[in-house]
Image (tube, rainbow, N blue to C red):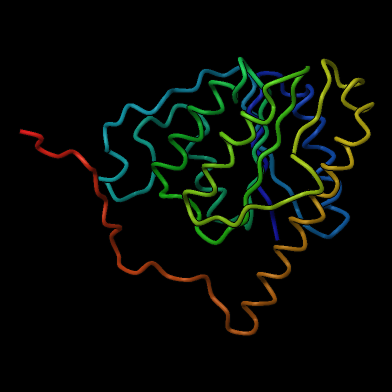
Length: 213
């Protein structure tokens, strides 16, 4: 079993990375492999809403000049997803949001595969950023992996993050819970349990614009 880690920080080995490392170590101890996609300082396009990913039927973004399509391909082979982001202006980083917008819209999500988010901040905005990231999983039929507390660490440097004893504990617990969930899903499959199918091939999308005349 394998989990894909997406580090949405512009710093490949900063505070967000340190939090994710703690999660990955716990997963490794449970025999779960980890793959990494660091966003780093590379430019990330936002979604243009062109719909080309749907028209082609390939479940890939037409703009293939960054790692979004790489992440989609890897997720087809991975069993779970963990996304990490620093807190910028009280939310997830802009690059991380743009990346996930295109990744989830083009692919249609990864139903049945557990997902979790991790955020790091100096002081505030962590809960808002965490809620923002978790919606990608909750809107795409992906079981949300819990931990002992909210999945966040505090600190302005790696050394300060390591001093956040409770945050480090939360990261380890998250890794253990992800491993447990993956193993439970695998055991269920062996017993013939499969993830529930949609009611229909197409979701009925509705808006509520009415003629008020």
